[in-house]
Length: 320
Image (tube, rainbow, N blue to C red; front, side):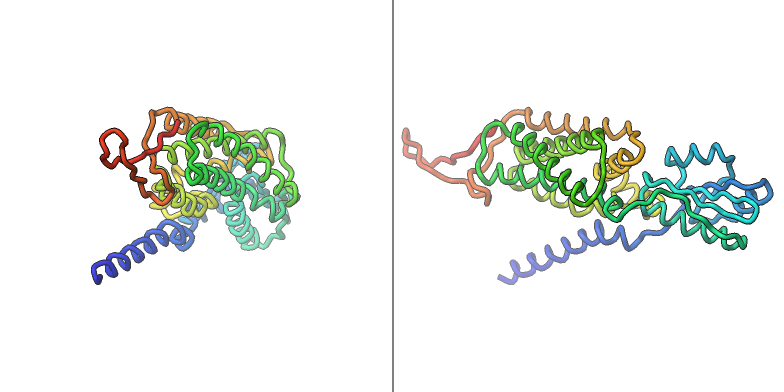
C-alpha cells in the first residue's frame, strides 16, 4: 500500500515539474536577445544609434528603401526614421505582436533619449486580430483531437481518414465563424490555409490514434499544452534552450505565423510545405498496416471463449 502511495505521489510531482518546465517555464524565462531593428537617419546619427545597441537589440543603420523592404519581409520588427525635429516608428502588423511591442518600446526610448517627439505609424490591429492566429491554431488542433478520440471511444473501425477530413472541414467552418463573430477579416487564401492546417492536424492525430488508441492522448495532449506557450513568442524573446528544443519544430508556430501573414500581406511559402509534410506523415500512419486496438476506451481487452476448443481468447478490434 505504501509503495502505491509513494509511486502515485512521485508521478504527480514529476508530471507537475515537466508541465511547468515545458509550459510556464517558457513565459517565466522570456527576455529579449538580439531583437532585429532598423534606423533611418543621417549618417552620424544613424551610426551613433546603431553603436548604442545592446545584447537585447540588434539595431542596423539602413536606407529608407532598405528599411521598407526589411519591414515588409519581417526581417526587422520595427523601423525608426529620424528627421529634423521628428522621429517616426514604423511597425508591420504581420509581425508577431510580442516582437512589435518590444520594438516599439525600444525605439521609443531611443527617440526620447534624443529629445525628439515620437509618432508611431502602424495599421490599427484589434485585440481579436492579435489573438486570432494562435487561437485558430489551438482550436484546429483540439477539434481534430476530439474527433479522433471519439472515433476510438465509439469503436469506429473503418473510414478513419474520412472521419478526420470531415472533422477538419467542420472545425475549420466553426473556427471561421468565430473569427467572423469577433470581427476578424480574412481572405479566401487564409481560409484555405486554415483548412490545410486542420486537415494535416486531423490526419496526424487519426494516425496516432490508430496505432496507439486512447494512449495517443498522452502525446497529443502534451503537445497542445506546451506548443502555444512558445508559438505565441518570437524566437528573440525565448530562452535559447526553449528556442532550440521547442520553438524550432512546433507546428503551432508555423500555423500561427502563416495565418498572421495571410491576414495582412498574403505571402507564405514554407508553411505550405510544413503542413503538407504533416498531412503526408498522417496518411502514412493511417495506411501503415493494421494495428490491434483494445475494444474498450479504458484499455481493457474483452476476453471470450473460443467455440472450437473452449479456450479463452482475447477479442481485438482491427481498424482500417
